Image (cartoon, rainbow, N blue to C red; front, side, top):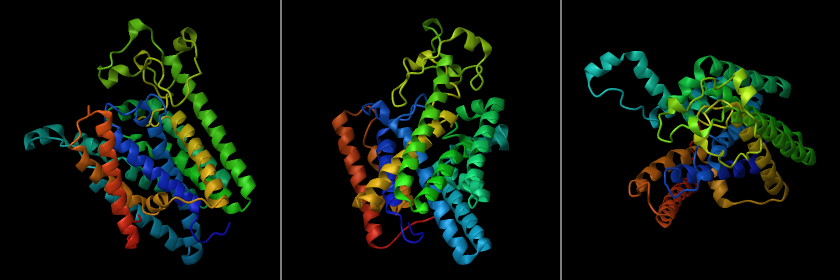
Length: 392
């Protein structure tokens, strides 16, 4: 495949991901929504597959566009351009993700102190856009490296994240952190690096080998992630130790969430047959731990499984889009202006959602979703016709 022009499968894959984001971000707060469309942080739901797909697509495009820019403008200009754009994306994240009110008056703020106040802000700011910006900066030194170097970089980042989680970070991010918190970039490196490797496969030009590797390696990553998640069954507890559903979060954590104690290995029986899209039996009977698939704690099992799912799914898009010539206009519109979609969908969702209580019946939730989805897509389509794109 040539290295110039757009890759249709990437645009369509990214458009599908944006559409999926619209679905889960709007529906996730309503009681009538099926569990699989909500973030649970105890297993990998459909909602949990969306964010890793963004990182996969960013990694793919990062590898592709950086190489083109380096050839056209030189390395120094290419690196400077990337750093400026990523800092701009981080600034946008600071504007979009509002920090909570840390104090109601000056005396409370003084009593709280600067570090605790800043910590509250940091936990709010590190969401999708900030994670993309920081993770992209993190992998920038190896973006031009060979596949082995990038793979080892991802493994090293994941290992470092596991060590830090064992040391102190699991408890820190569980207390109000979002999507892995301030050190989440170490975990989000996995799907982003996998995206860069997918780019290499597509640009290699051998379509059959590309499809085999996309789907084959994607399946293998999902299998490894699933096997790691089986360790979460070591944290099962009996009915007499069950944690009430309304207990605070800290009471649900295991005392040894990252490295199971010898007692757990001696007294618990692994029950590996737990499909990733099905909630574990009796979540109140399992202490929260680092091995369950959790987007909040950015667990390794979750990122490996979701990265593999992204890789395999992109393989299907590669077949039907670049192989069979299939296109969907909606996915093209959303995929070529994804950042605008991200910004607008939050505004439209908040506007429509104000008229929809959490316990609204299913028909009302469906009607509200269709209104929100339609309005958001119409805005993005209008910008597309006017040639207006937001790219950071």
